[in-house]
Amino acid sequence: LELERLGVHDSVEAVFPPAELAAFLADLPAPVDVIGDGEIATCDAAVTLEHREAFLELDWVHSIQAGVDRFPFDAFEANDVILTNSTGIHDRSVGETVAGYLLSFSRRLHDHVANQQERRWSRPEWDEAFTLPGKTACVVGTGTLGRGVAEVVGSLGVEMTGLRRSSESVPGFEAIYANDDLHAAIAEADFVIVTVPLTDDTRHLFDADAFDTMREDAYFVNVARGPVVDEPALIDALESDAIAGAALDVFEAEPLPENSPLWELDEVIVSPHCAAYTRDYFRDVGEIVRKNVSRLDSDAEFHNRVV
Ligand code: NDP
Image 1 (tube, rainbow, N blue to C red):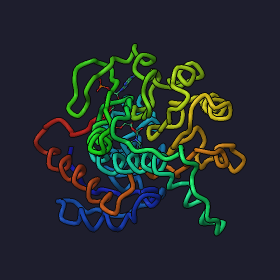
Image 2: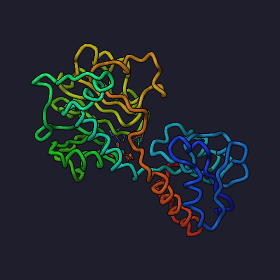
Image 3: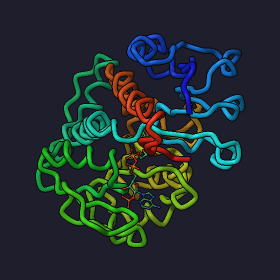
Image 4: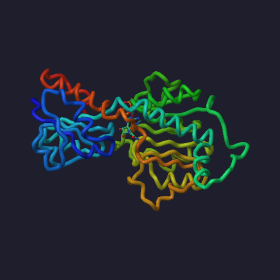
């Protein structure tokens, strides 16, 4: 593989200005340019948010997200195109976002912000606010996101348990469950936090049964991908008070449709798929790209290779 031109596809604009990444990578041995759809064919590699059919003519495509469920793996394989992702960089950002959700629920900050919009001086009921130490959280997926959540939320005194494909222990978690023990893992948790990739195995992992299993006073957090959750089942669970509330960064349809009941439900925090946003995002992605460019000549395995 020889890199002659690396394109920064303009779809990354949704997360950071493409020119910032191009400038960050300006010292690479090949030119790095911001490209639109019309210029994909002029490159041999691209950094992108979205998928385009024209990428199947390139040698290498790098996703600025960790989740690569929108890329057609079979077509990449069939066309000999390498696909790499950006796992490994979202630990602190997503961990802090999840800590923020938990602190909003415990300290009622989302209510204060909502009341402020209405110029309403309204204190919580005496038994609404609580503190986090001694509460338990089950993190479903103990990769980069899950470990970041364990680090930040664990530092607030929450007891962390995790669930992964193997039941091998993971630093930051007091107990680890294997994926066939989902119901045992989530049954007693005060917070259930989802951080798994979307795959055939995890699609609708959280269905009506899972929400039935959760405690009625438990909160659900999804920072993974919308289709990991059966959204109508979640809405039912929230409307029937089968669970206490939810913080959701990802949805089955994005943007979340204006008529979704999730916008208006009590004890639901909606964020627009931005749990991992940070002004340093382009640098973190740039370091992964740089590492892989340096591996091009050495025949070394690509870092974060997915296909
Ligand atoms: P990692 O690959 O580092 O971690 C994935 C974890 O999920 C691993 O612990 C893995 O288990 C576990 N897992 C995979 N399949 C299953 C399964 N069937 N049952 C139980 N556990 C499973 O990925 P990241 O942490 O970097 O990212 C995870 C996902 O989060 C991404 O794919 C993306 O969709 C989403 N994401 C969302 C963001 C946002 O902005 N909201 C930002 C970044 C990522 P094991 O350890 O045993 O391999």
